[in-house]
Image 1 (cartoon, helix red, strand yellow):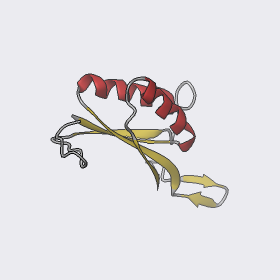
Image 2 (cartoon, one colour):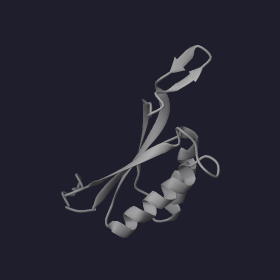
Image 3 (cartoon, one colour):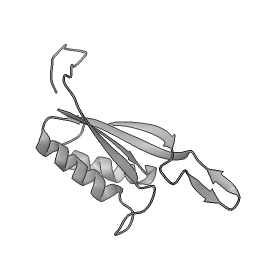
Image 4 (cartoon, one colour):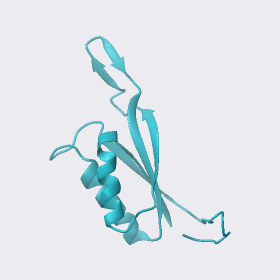
Length: 109
């Protein structure tokens, strides 16, 4: 199993969630977050905004194929324009050893 955490622009979230759902990945946690990337925020005139609002989408998938499918969907629909832009986001993937459903105590997804 793999946990995928994607930090994306808030205006892209609904489209990404709809595409993930259509592809068979309906279980997603969405969290409002703030942060900055390598560019250290955005400077507008004399004002520097170093805490940019983003959404974090978090989901756990069963196998390598699912992982690649999710990464492909997020990458495609989070990108702004043909080449993308600074601030489009980041995807983090980590292995998951175990998962449990609290209500039933069932192990696994």
